[in-house]
Image 1 (cartoon, rainbow, N blue to C red):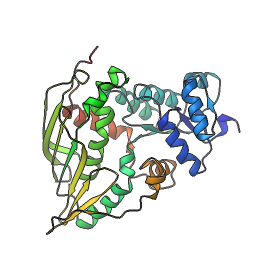
Image 2: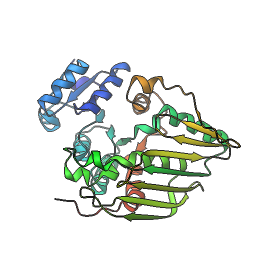
Image 3: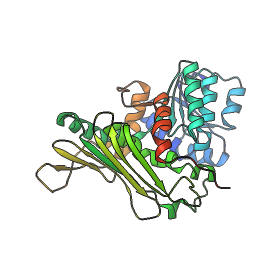
Image 4: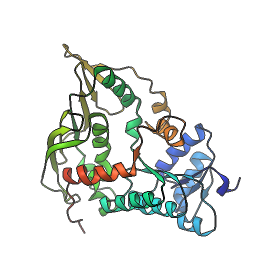
Length: 324
């Protein structure tokens, strides 16, 4: 089947693209794949059995191939925004782009504006919104009458990040590129800040925007919240959501531990996580929602991501000069 008649284009051939390919195959969605590097393409083809069109997206588009209406963008963080905009320029109407959809606020703004100009739908793939643990938590929160308070930690392991061969420009945006996974889940469940204070201290050689982060305030649903992270000290990711009847603990994020009011015992909640065990957690349900096979209520639109990046993330980790 020629590439241009397949209903979906997967851009990228790295590890994340392989995860998407596994889900698409399970959902029986025919798709074409475009990649740049021969090595990653060979690994992709060996793992999935799906051929990769080499040469990158620009070469693919220059060949005269008409892209489909649907696309998933799973390229390097530094190329997310440019790739998404190129697809929009060539008429792709619905795109799922890997988080955070751009290297910085300016790139995300450009994607949001391009999507609005073309009346296209672009969604940012924060897959933790689709974890089985998150689904179970949303059900408990609804049954309990909402969130009363929440807290989260997004400490990163600096000693493992600094030696990575990742480009310095990406490392300098590590809060947006990586820690926003945690913040997005916390705000998704608890509400976005409306009255709050944010504090940043220190810096790391590769992350001038700060090393220690703290903040607190009131979310739009009325819940009080706080957050903390110290990248120069031990720690781990975690989110805690409190209702009138339960404390819901995501630590690790794929699991949900529950504390019932009147008890100090923590119980691991039994959840239907078969899809999270068979595929990269959250990805199967996220792709289902993107394809319209499940409700899309919890997908994050690019316009909303732009608002969060500008109004929330820019205060949590204010941009500073990128190291040389």
